[in-house]
Amino acid sequence: AQKITQTQPGMFVQEKEAVTLDCTYDTSDPSYGLFWYKQPSSGEMIFLIYQGSYDQQNATEGRYSLNFQKARKSANLVISASQLGDSAMYFCAMRTYEANNLFFGTGTRLTVIP
Amino acid sequence: ETGVTQSPTHLIKTRGQQVTLRCSSQSGHNTVSWYQQALGQGPQFIFQYYREEENGRGNFPPRFSGLQFPNYSSELNVNALELDDSALYLCASSLVLRNYGYTFGSGTRLTVV
Image 1 (tube, rainbow over the protein chains, first blue to last red):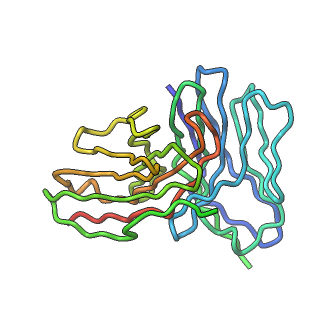
Image 2: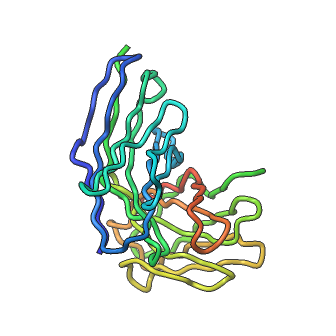
């Protein structure tokens, strides 16, 4: 069975500061992918970053980076230089090779303070 | 290229009624998945369609059903609506069955009263 855990229901960060959103996962499948999505109040899930289980390097996409620690089964999202527009819900998700779907965590609501 | 389009954006239905939600996949994408997101929760997988066949289903009862059309657009049908069916319904499309590049629509917010 797959499981995604996000233990931070809400986070606050000062504008221009960096913030880390936590995500731990569990799966017995050796081949899997980890995703982070941003969901503003409009509802759309916006893809931010992807990390494959066999990737040697941590993924980066602009201001987003994924701190992948495979042995600890964690995939934390780091947002650098936070902007007011980063205020939203953030979801960690996983897909294993065998499954046809994404498993989502319960999300973290990020609020950027001016 | 166009993204994923869902209609309607909002819907109010009465308990016991039936509802149909629609999704147009991103151009070139042949796989469509549907998710239900209850208030304050993460999305939960309902089912996926590939080449007009259901290809994977989550823990949802048979009154949740779907279709995929030759142009890869899709419908989600829910019969005998219950109050707990109130949620945001998200559609996601991808290029091939096991591709990791999902594109989500903005969802349909269904309220059952």
